[in-house]
Length: 453
Image 1 (cartoon, helix red, strand yellow):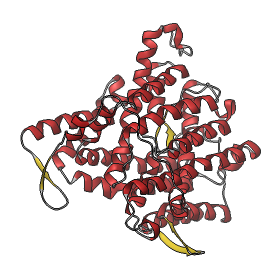
Image 2: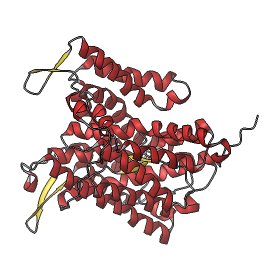
Image 3: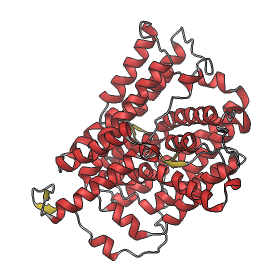
Image 4: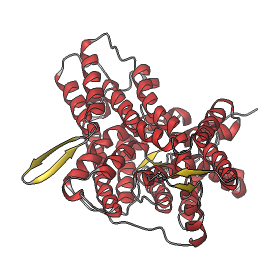
């Protein structure tokens, strides 16, 4: 039996290529649409159609920047959820009493700048080389930052699940069952299966008269399809032009430190999976440019940040088809879905309890990935230097829950706990003696550095 990977899927014929493209789309679908669902739960109107549209556009743009060589899909980044949550709750300065749609515009402006931060790192890597740059971002810094991202989101998972615990537990149990015991494609789409099965349970519970209490203690139906009935089958994705303010930039832009690490980890993982050194050819600077500009383009029009998806790397392993053309087909399918408003409303009708159940796994896994980053890179915590850096990052990230607000030249600026943690970690790592980390020495550790969905 020939187990050689298929690098040109055209030999399989058009029908099989289309099916393989659909498989990649389904692999990214659950996580990609979950980001706008979660953000809507925070009170910001991030749109599902817009998200799907820019996931597809961003993927095609990334492929163009990477010389059409890398079979990577770009979907919504979970790393920015903490920033969305902070912006939704911000009520100081210009944000006092601001409508949610305008808050989203300013949040998007911060993400635009976050995407441009990628270009700075790409330029530095091009000039100085990847090893010198990564010395300033070792696992003792990136690992605890990623842990903080998950832990700061944990309370929202509990509050959402509390609206209907039975439904949340169905979603949670389904994800665990498919992730541990699932076979074939079902094993790589446990989040999607959790959403589908718990949504079916919600329909049954709703038909049986189950209700939930709203914020005022008034009983409400578990599901409402009023918006679905009004939605058209075909329609343009709604775009929101980004607005810029120093506070939103300082909330969102530092998160790029975590997502750039995710990107580097994913590029390493895809290189290992396909047995091609994509970090050398087309080069990490090119892939960072593609990812960063895709994020900036999406945010300019009110979409979420994009990031390379670990799920689709799993599909490469499962299918043994490494042709980037198949991933570009998935991108086209995502763009088409972006023009179907009724589908977006069906997804948007999902009870918040399902979101809570899914978030239990998702937010916990983000923190667990940070721990894995530390463990697999063999960070030595008997070394006082490493212990101090990690301790300061964790306390800053979790302790400054309301951020740190100060005024410069009459402008109110808020640094989030995550931004403070990132700054403190990078500065301490740079000034404390004994930094012995070198990127590339431990490839297994380096390739597992990201926040995989």
